[in-house]
Image 1 (tube, one colour):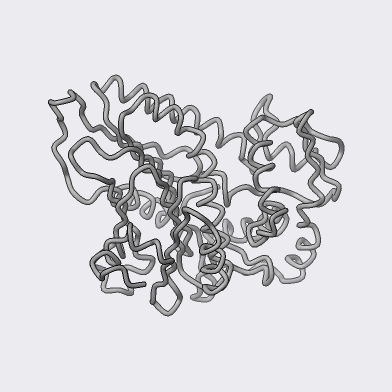
Image 2 (cartoon, helix red, strand yellow):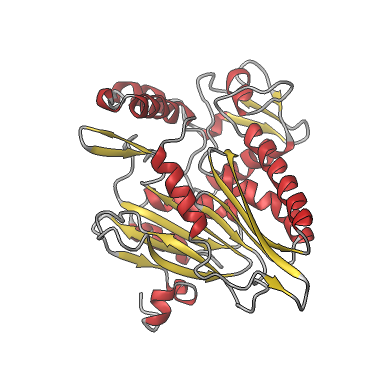
Length: 364
C-alpha cells in the first residue's frame, strides 16, 4: 500500500506531539538518558520509540529488536503481499477456502480475539469485511495515483461483496491452529486491529529492557512507566483533525496525561482520497458500505492496545449515543469523540486524563 504525503505528515506529527516539553536528557541519578528513533517501513506508518537507556548502544539494540518484532507482525498480517515460507493473511485469503490452512501463532491469536468480539455482539468492526474493504482499497489507491480521475466504487460491486462478510463462515481449529473459509468468497482484513495487537505484543520486551518508554505506531500510542525526568505521566497529543479549518495554528486539540496506558485514535484524516471535492476515508460502515460520516475522530484510552484499536473503529461507526453506552458498560475504558459539527463528547472518566477537562473541573 502506498503512503500519501498527508499520511506521512500526520504520522510524523503524532510522534512529535507525544511529548509537550523538552526535558533534561541526562539523568545522572540513575545514569539514564532519553533517546528516540523512528522507522518508516513497517505497518505503512511512522513508528517512533522513545525511551530511557544507559547508553545509545543499549537503546539501539532495544529499538532494532522491537522493529524486528513489528516487521514480523507486519508481514504476518499483510493482506496484500506474499512472503516466502509464510502462511500470512495474503496466503490465507487465497487458500483457506480450499482446505484448512495452518497459520502462524500471531495470526491465529488475532483472528481468534476478533471472533470473540463478534460472538459478544460487537460487529461494527468486522475483519471478515475484506471483500468490501479491498474494493475501497483499489479505488482509493487509484484515486491517490491519479486524483483527477478518482472515482467511487459502484454500489452494485459493494453490495455483491457484502454478501460474503459473515464471520461465522471463518472456521478456526485451536488444536491444529488452522483457519478454513466455509464461504469461498470471504476474505479477511485485520487493518482495524493489527497495529494495536502488535503494540501489545512488543510490550513484554520493552518493559524488560527499558525502565520507561513511549511507543507510537501512527495513531496508536502506548505510554509505559512514568518518564524518568520527574513527571508523573507522559503527555500525548490528540491531533486536531481539521487544523486548516480551525485557523491552522494549533495542530492538536488537547493533551492526555497517561502512564501504563494506551491512547489510540481513529480518524477520517489518516487515509482518504477525494472525489468531486469530497473526502472518502478508510473506515467503512458495514450498514452503508461507505465511509462512516457520524464523526471525525475517536480516541480511546485503556490498558490494551488491541482493544483500543478495535473500539476506536467500532465507535467511529456507531452513533455517539450508542458509543457512549458501550463505553459506559466497560471497565477501565474511556473515549473522546470529535463530532462532525466540531463539538466534542467524552466519557465521564476521561476527565482524569484530558487536560481541557481537568482545567474545566471535569465537565463533559
